Image (cartoon, rainbow, N blue to C red; front, side):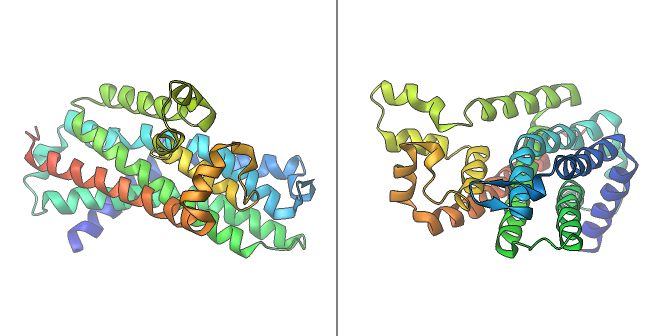
Length: 275
């Protein structure tokens, strides 16, 4: 446990010194500033006002930005250390591969989640100063969604990083993965599958295997319980899950997917030729 925490601490220190972390922090901090600058905290859309409207817009923007940032920065972890010759030095230290690998995950998760959460927390604090009512349930739920989204794509990134033999290949694979998930983001795009006589349930199941689609649909559900924006696909989701069931699915599935990717990545990493 001590070595795991030391490995996490080392990754946190390295991230604080890295240029990507500065850019990452400025992006999410800038998003909140822009949302306030354009007065979204005072606007009224579909009955949502104040911080509810701001958090809703922030969560939708985060869905597009967070995964690609997490993937691109994470895939260099193992592949970059392999290229830099870190493993030869690592093998000479009294630290297990498991402690190093999982400590790196713990440290990287802290660094990718912290700026997103702090930016949202800053928005809430500013709203409270202005006397805006805090939507406590919405804030807790969106925080949990951001946590599981970051964990899921961190796991996918670590798996890609373990499989790739160079950082360039890892970054290319990460971008292709993000682009593929983005292309299948909307259930409407699966209309072609239904036109080819694929059952609607099967088409929706394929869509809901995409963690980005799960996140997007879950973020909609609190302000649109009937999922009107999804059209007929909403009937399949609500009939099979229900509102509470889908919210639970949206919180559990990404965690399981991310953990499975991390575990597979660790076993491949342990059995691979490290140098």
